[in-house]
Image 1 (spheres, helix red, strand yellow):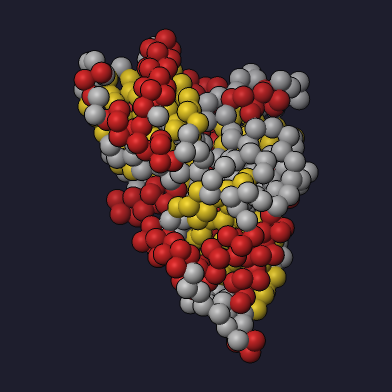
Image 2 (cartoon, helix red, strand yellow; image 1 turned 30 degrees about the horizontal axis):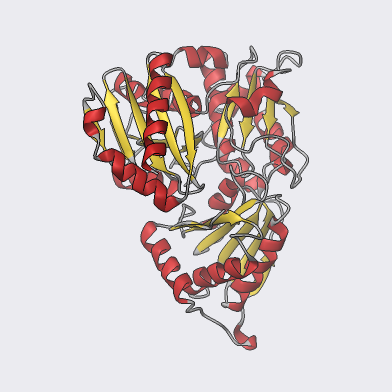
Length: 451
């Protein structure tokens, strides 16, 4: 399990590819990049996170940084806090959507968003060169511990949400935060927004009781009993509250693709504007944008690219099919609390259950596959397939924004090497399930033959 390096951070399997030496060197590179400036630091509840937290904290102090230690804190709350604390950036230690044993360091910029690619590349250059800032004992940094950020965060969130409508609806809501960094904040969230909370997997722990990535099979536990507790909606999140899937009042676990679609439909009804998404998110987003006479901008996969395009294009909402949504008017990252609040608001204001909101969407059949392989071989396989365009009969367009995408009138097919895992992701969507599955299987075979 090799180390995954990107412009916004690094990710690996603790004790194998992700070692303490690697973590300290990477933190030193970031501390050097910010020239010993003020940084925020937060972590999740993974078993390895306290150890990595200690290593990062000590290293940043040695670079002269003033470190504001937020302790256990979800990434979107950390992103929100960067600007109020007048920090030059932040570090989030979180396993995110990866399984047990994995962890990562995610770097933030002075606006709270993932560090811009240009800055991230400089951090990587410093990391590889081993050229780090080291302060003498009289000029090392210091640590400032901060208590609960919940009041300030939820007060700010409430200013962007119709809280009164949610309160009047008196929803019963199930939330599964995967025993992660969002767990300590669920009761405050429920109290501030006026719904009855039924929490699942909400005791902070390093043991993951289900698959980390929010998707229908991750939601089966919640789906099995939401009707028995008279829940009106269920939310399934990853351990840092940046991705979400949903369960309807009827006990149907929905695709993570619908998270962005449901929220985008509601936002664009109120405030039409440019929508930003990646090149492998459901075509429902394109159809919704057309329905509301809005423009869609496509980017590479990743929060950093979505945020950059929102800034450049003046977009009103951004998101990805993996279950992340960004509202630049409030925050600079994918935010699970924001996503839950907007879905509840949509249900209350439109007086529609979640199943009704989903019925209003353009619907397609989407199939997701993966092929395990190293990054170099994965990129090589995709390059090989790009040269075989004639194999995709009837295709109307090809796109290489991120990986390789083929479009037909009734669907599309996409393959890309993951930035966070040792896999090539394959996504196929069509109006017919059989065709979506057929195209996905075809791409998997082509990748296998090219490795």
